[in-house]
Image 1: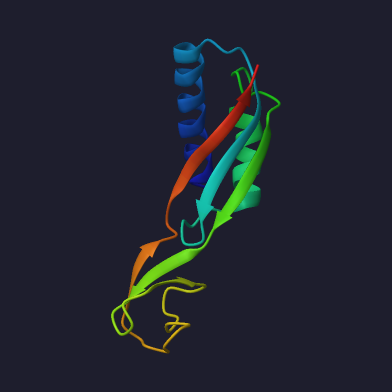
Image 2: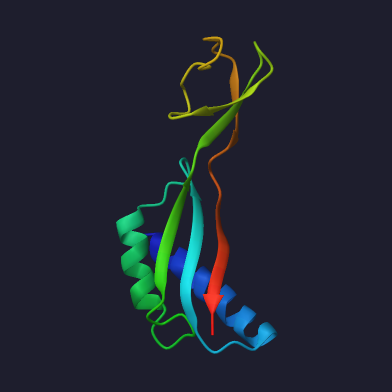
Length: 113
C-alpha cells in the first residue's frame, strides 16, 4: 500500500511547515490528486488518519480535490481533458495525444491555528 508512504510524506511536509511558520495545528488539509496519479483515495484517507497521529495534523479533515487527466493533441494542437490515457481527442477525434497532466499529487493548502 503506497498510500502509507504518501501519507508519511505529507506528514513530513506538515511538520516542516509547522516549524517554519509557527502553527500548532492543522484543521483542514486539501490535496489535489490527478486522475492518473494511481492513488486509492479510501486507502489514503485511512493512512492519513493513522500517520498523522502525534503530528500537527492529527484529527485534521482531509479534502481530496480531483484534477482531470490532460493531453496535448498533435492533430488539432489543443490541450484537452481526457478520462483514460488512451482516449481519442474529444475535439477532433485524433489519436495522437501525449499526456500533459493528471499524474500529480500536491498539497493545495492547509487551514491552521
